[in-house]
Image (cartoon, rainbow, N blue to C red; front, side, top):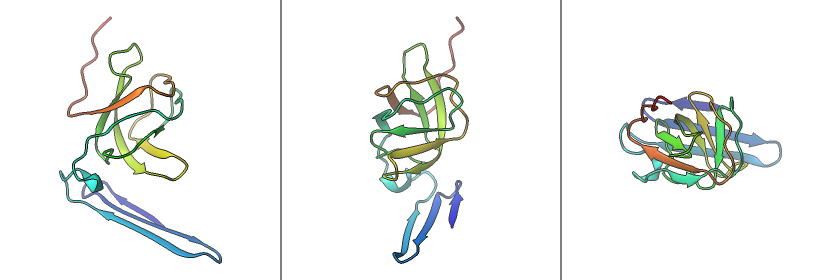
Length: 125
């Protein structure tokens, strides 16, 4: 069972496996509180390459990466783009950040992922 309420940042995950009992994780944060990371800023790198069209990324460290955060991938480079985080799943098969949209460009492992307050307006080329 999974329940995500993006506006109030309620995340409830129930995972059960036969013979192993039940694992319950609950994280609650009020809007504007920075989520469960206590106002830390998302500042990390891609742990794996991500292809154009992907709706999620795997980052090296999900600390500070919260639902609703706007992030810029590979800032200052030709494939720079801004996305919004829809969901963060730390520690399960890497630190996964699902995105509201899909990636417009291919990105390599090691590229920067930084939180911004507003997505930058692309400069016409």
